[in-house]
Length: 515
Image (cartoon, rainbow, N blue to C red; front, top):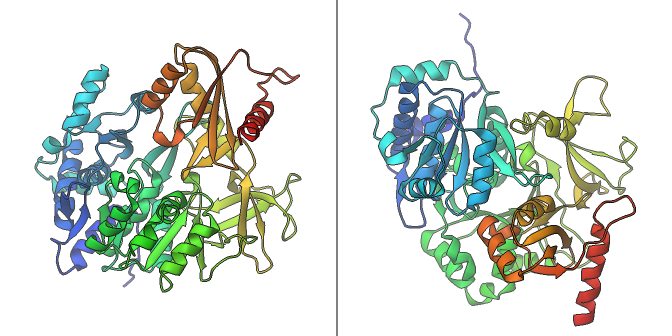
């Protein structure tokens, strides 16, 4: 008799297998900022009910927007979309209306799952999309037969979600992830972090970004638990540490700026996060003085540097830092996860010598199929591997890196005007796109001073106060310019393009005069 061993196909198998194996299915899986919680049993019941609703409405293999406040219920909605054989587009009540409109226009979702607050916002904005309330559809009767039919038609190459990042034209671009790419990521990440049923995550990232994968799907796979930390606590680092200790949080995967906030304001000297034993960080450079302070405070903890773009489904590289670093050193991004290859390619399409810079390019099943509804951007970013003689796509990250003497990878910088700010990759063009839509702005140009992580917006127009208010209403906090400067005219290069280099130099010179 022949037996077939089947690899995992659908991300929902994490939840299902965990429920079968865990001793207590009423263990809390996710706890929200308001102390609301969902157990593993709850997640299964609510998400299967939502999936049955989609089956009853014959909505299958469609984009479904989940526009809710950050909460455990939002995660259940994600899973419900997937049970229905669809893929979700996460949106958040804290996102500006301007950005939400652009995303909805780009995907034309079959419907939008809302909560009470976001339902009111949709009505207030006058949007004409079909909406359903999560509380209502999650009360639908579960149709096991319909769910089984949907599952049998699912393959691991099917899309799981679309998350939107900053776009080079000013319009957000949607990165598609598949079941297989997320499964590969979670399998690798879980092993690196040594996750098990005793792991207690402290989630920092919004649920509309792929960064939340670290806590969401890893929790489902291992039967762990995760707290969605109240965002307000990051303004009060001592209270944040007290929250970590009170909840017994032992593992965090935060952007480096969040860790720097705690260290830079002296919170580690006032309060020790005694329960932490694993600290993963990434998305931007972690200042060594802050890293060393964390390491001095928690000498027995594991510190893991992660690197990777959204287009490669989360993180692609890891490095466990086991010592303090001197000011002239940098922490490596290390080596790729299993089933992922990182290659460096120089301007001549060749592999640079060790120590020499090259663009970081990624290949493997971790790669996104591309950008939603945008084959041109997809073909520009996901290209043929110049080092391969057969069809082989790689993703060009736009990041420069080098290899150390032992083959470990080091991040150097960005190679274009896309920036990393407050843990997010941002296209300056998106800031300009929003600014230029303001009635008080004739033309705008954004530049970034990397020495002090400062976004500067120059514009021709009038009323800086009004411009600032408009940007605040239409951009996420992490994209807001720190300086908004009105000018009579913007400079141009001989080729007729805005002189961004000249504007950045103007800002640096004005800063030097003030100092």
